[in-house]
Length: 155
Length: 283
Image 1 (tube, rainbow over the protein chains, first blue to last red):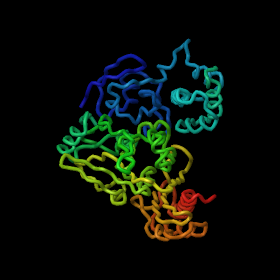
Image 2 (image 1 turned 180 degrees about the horizontal axis):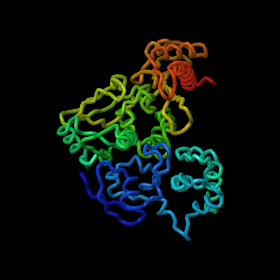
Image 3 (image 1 turned 30 degrees about the horizontal axis):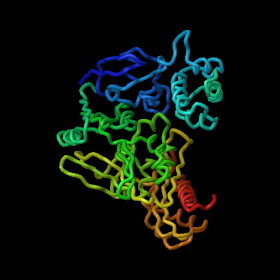
Image 4 (image 1 turned 60 degrees about the vertical axis):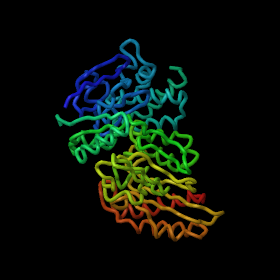
């Protein structure tokens, strides 16, 4: 069974035909061409597909796409673009908070929701909040540094 | 999976009618954190999904001497709710230790219970808090104590036409504590977990509930161990003896997370820690 799903993606309305068992991640990557959210584990464990739905970080791989009807979805593509990067994107770049880069979009999206909630997080708060985003290259120290650099609005 | 039906009822009445019509053909979808991996990995082939996220079941309130939590309340709601923090802080403590921020933003308390994992974290503290669940169908409603709710791994007493509506925690919720051992701190299922609730009369225990997870096919209440505490003053020796008795009620297995031997050793320590924490005894 296919149904039409309508939701807001990075501020613009979209309509897309989806199967019931399609996840938000399937629809973003395969139907809409938004490949910033990565498919790591497809089980909610790794955090590479983290997106923001109505202000909260969720796993796109765990969300049945049709449940997104009427919701506001923001992906890494909605945070900044070439030449006009989000402060977190700049800080991740400046601090080398990525190596292979696979986890990075999920890391930045999670970090954005952390700073929306706690503008000046402590090191412990950063570690606890970011613990659901896994990096196989081991960039955790640099990720925390990049978040610290942006926190409180300073770049 | 081309032909799976999708229903998103907008009120409880519609949802119950759909469940009554479809019976075993319906799979209830809430936060999806347990269900969707099973779909993604083809271990679950639903006929129809009924999404219950728009039924207004995400409330947390106090009424009639009970803390009432709608089955759709998320882990994040529970761990941030001021009423939970005041009335049942051990529940918030358990919520904080489950999964990650992103899975806690989606996963619900109703899902944690209905999924009936023997290792579920919210479940084990709710069991210790003597919670009941309100089940509704188009034919009526009933409440079931959590200690009578689970029948096996992934199995509960719920009928196909019933919806888990609400969790009800009797207040006051005593002095309670939750302890969990995972293979790491975050984003991990429990190797063993425990919830305890003590009613303390000065320093004498007048009632105890001890719940243990990942030690049997269902989350367990350890009644023999509970009885050991009643009328006694808790100290380190009694706690150690009681924790050993609690774990003796289990029948742990070897699996990918731990061996039965390890679960028994670690479970004893986890129960002892939870008891000490609830009793306010250092260590």
